[in-house]
Image 1: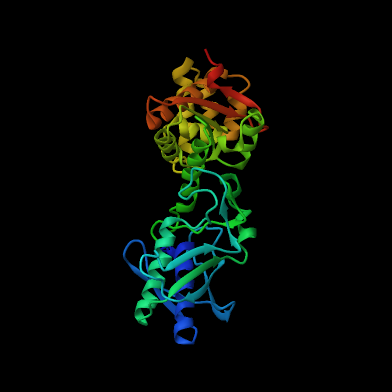
Image 2: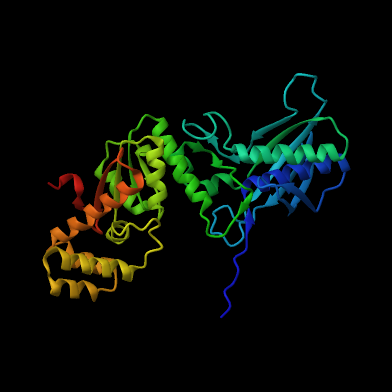
Length: 366
């Protein structure tokens, strides 16, 4: 069976740039464009369909439907818009003639540590460059020297933001307008890795020197219950990005990283998998079986582990009766993480059982 080629898409930043260019063309030509071409941050150009244009509020508003291609992106299908108003040409020395603001559904930054300071709309520098360039192109094509005010808006932005970690990062009231290239590549997880980087930056900017890395919402809830005195910024969900998150934490200057995980991810981390989704469960259990043999030559235990079908089944076999093997997994996590983070970072591993109790804590081990 022929493998299907995954379809690329475009970012919210590209959508905002296209909406802004469409609104300028509408104002200058008197008719709404069906599509506009925008320059991406890669230097390539992309034609984007315009969803809707309308006059009003002393200017014009156009919207674009964000298309993430085959990438699982919460903003796929979202309407991204721009209200554009034209003004008299700026006097010499007055600065940029393109002013970009955030409107309804675009989040506002309230915490330090992100690419923009608190108080600014969450429209990242890359998308701002794209928006400004798209508008300048439209003006130049018509020989216009007018100044422009652009307000980016996302009609369902507040609702969409509830499915992101924006509030944790201190981005309130809507989504972020993102994009480092302008293109969304399927399964690149660019938005998720950007969120990890932002979470670590915010944690460091708020004065924290230790951070708890979890792989998802459930392990994070248990970690927050384990350390209720720590602020929410101290907890960062990293998904499967084991190596990347540790390297980033080291670069940000954290002195301690705590990995708080369930047994399935623990096994993959213990094997040193840079990206824990890549290691198949069967291989994880095979490794665990070999570790059991190496520990005390327990062939019966190794055979029973090898017969398990899931990490949970293996955990229920190991955790209550074989603490030394569980500890071996935890120590291997520390060793693997230390290789990624370097010697300057103290690594601590915590393995939860499936009820959220701590089954292993490397800090408690002698």
